Length: 122
Image 1 (spheres, rainbow, N blue to C red):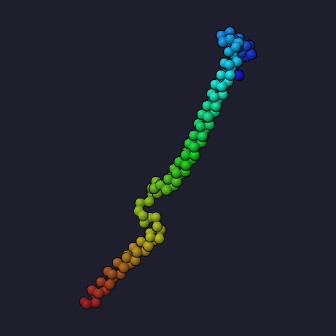
Image 2: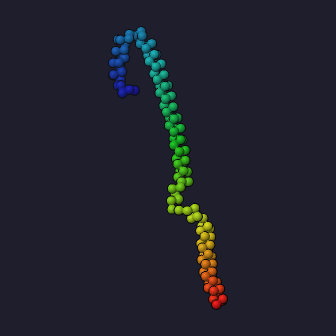
Image 3: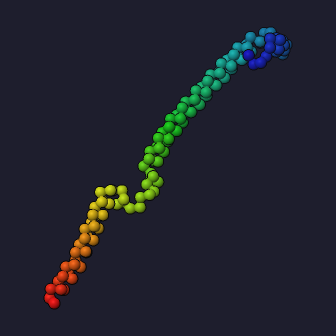
């Protein structure tokens, strides 16, 4: 039971009989049994409380992992290469390119009109 062999147990019982006496030995055994039951009950209760707390902690750990993953998914760290909000919208980028092409074409047409206008009065 506690690493005690049969011979050692007999020696311990003999010493108890000598010290306590044969009349008080049954009473002492009952008290020891009550103490042992109370000790085992307290041990099991503490064990179940610790296990329950560990299970609750594991639930929190899983929740924190989910929150961390969601935070990483929505983080602006993933958008490091974008310099301007216009770069996000490709339609806006194409619109700006077309505007610049139209403006360049208008500028090219304006000097030609002024040159032809200057030539006419002469």
